[in-house]
Amino acid sequence: MEPKTVNPPIPEMKVARKSKRRTILYLLRKDWQLYSLLILPILYLLIFKYGPMIGNVIAFRRFVPGGSIFGEQWVGLHYFRMFIEDPTFWRVFSNTLILGGLTMLLTFPMPIVFALLLNEVKNKKFKKFVQTASYLPHFLSIVIVAGMILQLTALNGSINSLIQFFGGDPINFMQQADWFRTIYVTSEIWQGMGWGAILYLAALTTIDDSLYEAARIDGANRWKQTLHVTIPGILPTIVTVLILNMGSFLAVGFEKILLLYNPLIYETSDVISTYLYRVGLGSSNFSYATAIGLFESIIGLILVLSVNAISRKVTERSLW
Image (cartoon, rainbow, N blue to C red; front, side, top):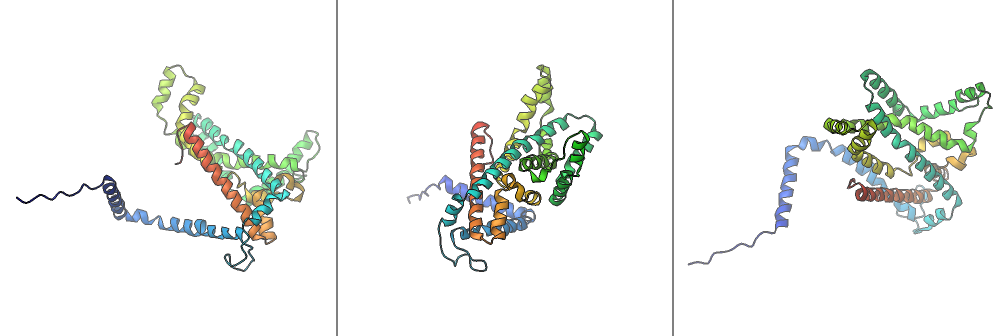
């Protein structure tokens, strides 16, 4: 009688990998038309997002405009030491932190509050009107918004006319550093509150009405329903938006600030992005500007990772 050949068992990991590969290939073949739509977005990311990262090498080289980013003298951390020892950098860095902090502190919760209030409106026509009116500022060009701000805050503008009407003295807002942060943050709230509320309004529609009914039976008023039903229902959306916003915490609105600021208010208006613009493009010191930009990106990455980790630990919700 011939002995039977016993094949060794196939490791479960290999079977799982093969099964996963087959599933991916099957999905690609089945829905290739849909996946082909990803080609342009992926190319965009590779060319305009990941490609320029190679240019960060000039932060470690003495780059000369017109030369190769790989062919100049290697200087290591020289430019990083330069901006660390530069008092002007720390001034713009502190301005960036203050403006970014105020913007996050005030503009992040406002869309949530606005969405909660709008969700309570029962008149559909009035609700649509308010929604439309609140969305419009988002679509205005930064140039138009900056022009409106400059006109309103001018010595002969509407705000000063109102101040004089009540017996006050006119204020030259755009030449007094103390006013810049208030003006900037207020304009950010006005421009982004309505648009930012869209995500939360969509999240509110996913909350089961039976939860509100159960809360009412238990004697909960509207405030308690908001605290114990509504807020937990939109918490995943809040966490996601917060984590994404932290990535751009230091990227305070460059275009708006560039259009509004002037040397008289550099003390409070000059931020990292405008400083990079003056140093990099104005003075052609590209290596120094790249070093600062790389530092800003690293800080942003650390903030995103930190907030994501804290959120995962505290709320058990995170992006990854």
